Length: 159
Ligand SMILES: Cc1cc2nc3c(=O)[nH]c(=O)nc-3n(C[C@H](O)[C@H](O)[C@H](O)COP(=O)(O)O)c2cc1C
Image (cartoon, rainbow, N blue to C red; front, top):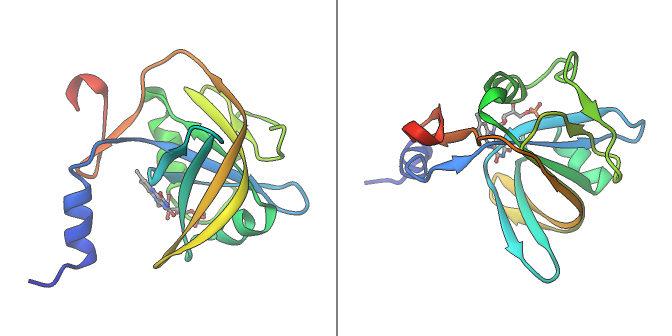
């Protein structure tokens, strides 16, 4: 049986993840971002995380060019925000409270945690690229995580 994109989505859908919005900026300082769950910790020393960005994403070039990103880990109250950042086009940041990041990529207010990263490596990953980021700043807040499992948003209690 051929292993196609639908089958990959189905099998990876059984791997419960958190949900993040990864943000960056362009040369003029305008913010860009997308909903992402293909992120993972990579190294403790040095502290590295990786994100995977679709080559077709509108914000793709801005991650590539700016060499910075912030991972905003979402809470259960931020499901609408996740849906908004999972659609291409438009100004996704209108009405979204953000704080300027030290690396230039915005921090989304109310997130469970932020990791501000500088891209140290970019690797080929099929129709995505893998950006490796050195964590330069991080903070953690209180709250419950937004989860994603079998194509649906979940909370810890019903995940
Ligand atoms: C739960 C969830 C996780 C996602 N994870 C990723 C991801 O890790 N990488 C990615 O490139 N797109 C991911 N997407 C899809 C992007 O959010 C979507 O393609 C978005 O429209 C891209 O925004 P842009 O085209 O404005 O850059 C995910 C979507 C959802 C709903």
